[in-house]
Length: 318
Image: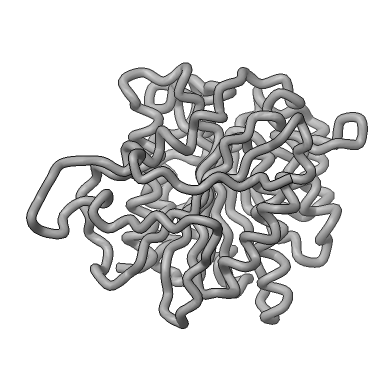
């Protein structure tokens, strides 16, 4: 079964200009997973309109429309990345008849291929189960190249929940990565909310020697402490994979998610983290997940997601 759908140029629209000023003017939509193989660095954008993992995790459905919503906003943004940096949209990977595992294997393979062909992968979700598939590809690439990988997750949840009936879901991706790649699991979670994570998950995080900052510490007023903790983590690794779960943001800024967080963090502290990670030049792959347009208000969450992608890439390639 072919789980790939070609990119749609109609998703990339915006203000017209005779100059190269907007994202929709820069994006190249390439069909049939024909990865650009040049040695030059480039951005490879892919979508995962999947919600089977959310369904298994008893979340509210609608994340399947997330990638298209992010693309539509991204296309309208002003373009400030290097003009010679190719931004390539390769389309989406779907889940067919609930076979999440087949989708995951496809995403793992594609992520590895993107990295090996000098792409910076950007995956747009979709449920956070994407992290297991995406992270597996990044870890395999890092292992092959002798690099110690660090995983940074901005999220209200650890996502270290065990499998359900032997199957993964949107609450288990980092549990799965830890079990499949125990020697490569170096995990930093930012914005963890005690009310959203039972004691057993804190115990699981500690058992895995994971690092985390709870919501009470993940505030702008605590920036010096946050910067110290992240900088220490950066010093321990050679490369970074960043996962941004939109449900970690306060629902005042991100209402359109599967599990809204009224006590989540604000964009200002998150973007300071993005700045720090981008400047490290260790970031090699990115995902933004859990956008649920059905519950969004005036595209606030889609705009936040798109601005996050744009800013991270600008800091990483600027």
